[in-house]
Structures are given as structure tokens and as C-alpha cells.
Amino acid sequence: MHGPLDVLVTYVPRERTADVLEALFGVGAGRVGNYDRCAFVSSGTGQFRPLPGANPSVGQLHQLENVPEDRVEVTYPRALRRSVLAALRAAHPYEEPAFHVIENAAT
Image 1 (cartoon, rainbow, N blue to C red):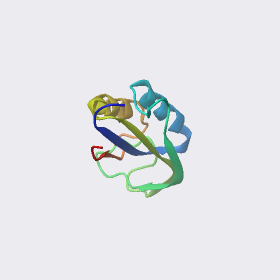
Image 2 (image 1 turned 180 degrees about the vertical axis):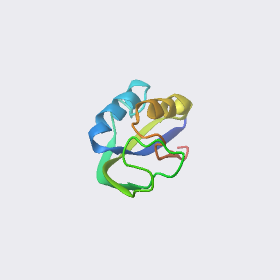
Image 3 (image 1 turned 30 degrees about the horizontal axis):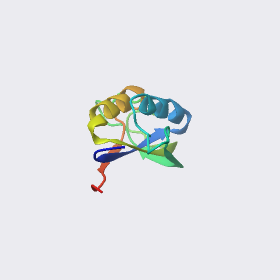
Image 4 (image 1 turned 90 degrees about the horizontal axis):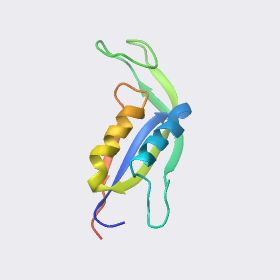
């Protein structure tokens, strides 16, 4: 892989992790050297409370929700950032998916 790399970290309801990964792999995320479909997935519990104006796919307004989620991490060429984030938003079931984009230091 040439050029600078980013890492996407996001949190996905466990039953939708495979769908989100497929969308990310479909636009070129998860390729490292001579390997593809590379990801790190760890399990935990996500917490949120929908506020007025929200249209939650899980839970109800003003109710604290705890959801089994996976933390998903994938690497991708920085040039793909826009398409990777678009794929994440299209495939993620939440109205507002939480995510971080980390820029790797140049090597």
C-alpha cells in the first residue's frame, strides 16, 4: 500500500457488524500489503440516550439504552477517506454512527 493511511474506528450493533465490514471492504478498506479484508473486532457495550429530534433505530426518546456492540477497526489509504465514510454511513444502522478517523504517521 502506498501513500498515507488512516484507521477507521467505529461501534456497530453486534448483529450488523458483518454488514458494515462488507460495505467498508467493498470500497477498499481493510487492505494491508498482500492481505485484504483485514479488521480488528472486539466486543463491548454501547450506551446512548436519544434526545428530542432523534429518530433512533434502537430505543426510545429519553430512555438510556445499552446495546451489545462491536468496536471495528480498519485501515485504508487516506485517499479513500470520503468513500469509506460514505460506505460507513450507508451501511450503519444508527442514525448517527459514532466513529474516529486516525491518521497514521508517515513511514
